[in-house]
Image 1 (cartoon, helix red, strand yellow):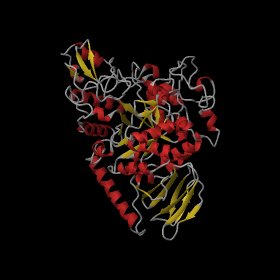
Image 2: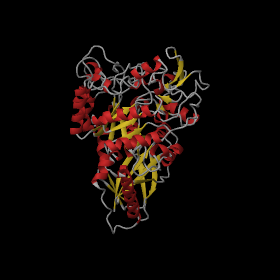
Image 3: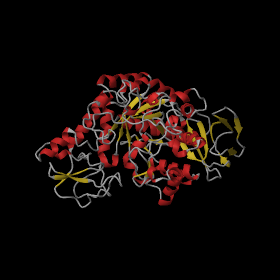
Image 4: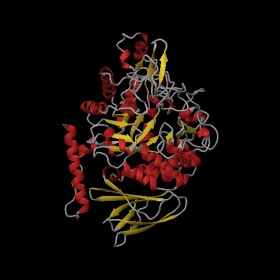
Length: 576
């Protein structure tokens, strides 16, 4: 009932706002109720992705820990972080960088104690920072007690917690998540005498989500961490979590059970009304509706992988046509839902939804060497070395903060950290945070680290670090902090209605937001060459530059001409 009331009120608010935008200024728009802001906090605010293991080591053992991240909370607050998203921190054999969990209820002892975790949550909350965590319940480690018992005997109550087949299924080598590295999705277990199903690596057996006992256990896991202070969950591999898997199904054409998401949403909000689900679901726009739910009853937020792939095509080609289409194709979402936009995350840049020709153009520009490519679909590089041009990097961050949704940044991207292509697969972009130019980048005092720091070339910690950039007003760190502050000045982006404006240039993206009688406009030139663009707007007649407060007049017919430098951009507020 609470959710239905919220949906009704927000829908009514949006309807009123549309009327306010099309009518005159006679009646001021109603202010947004405070409880809406609290319930829908995910509409705005920067999310910062952190892997505790490589962020900051407090005790000199070479491994990052919760005390270490607690020590850096003021840094994150200064950056403008509203929410911290934690990578898996539970006990693990660590064969997949923590995504092979062996105990869902505990803290990995390498990362600290229960008290360390509780202190971290408390200190973050005191600074007004929420904490989210990965929910990795699509699979377990094969070292988890559940799987160990399941493989021992068919009569084990945990046997049905996993997906088994007496014979090797016909589609045993189809639907692999990591092609080129992974060989199959069904593996024979000698102890069990049967094949078990695994979408990911063969040491990560999939849980059987069709089993009510497994669903109940997942709810227990969620309740446990909500009680510990977690504000939401980034749900790992949503399409695989809810697929109906059995020996006869086709992994390339799975059937999904969306009511699992609905039940999770209800359960979470019953226990913490403003807790959220942030879904990892790389799906086509035609398939997005059931993930959000037609009325917003499923995922509150999802990563916009579709727009991300076309954003990188625009950055590589300078052309905005496909990016505009991607934004338009993903525009229709429930009023309480929100997209999460990003430049880089902890995985490869997935270009699988681009055409072969489009993907080749991105490869040629950003990942020309095969060592930079991964899984026949993506690029395993950090943003700064990939783009290689400071003006283009600045443009990319301006675009990120201006897109309709909440921005997400991966640790180290705010200072332009590099990648280590000597490390396997996705570990190339998961090196320790570079805090200073001192030994081991200020990450640790240990001689041996959990993973090597980048200590050579232009992206060495001796060149790129938080300490070096904090005092440099022109640094990337300070640029990102300024963009964060600028975004906070523009609640229209998270709350308002938006439209793409015609610019007269294939290289220029212009987007206008309208909310409660206020409007903002962002213009971005994806070309390295200067561009002249022509805009026609319904509101005005004055544009105020949000960077320097200078004013420009709009023509009486609503037209405005803008000259942008190569990779240039402008943020404006429209004044009447």
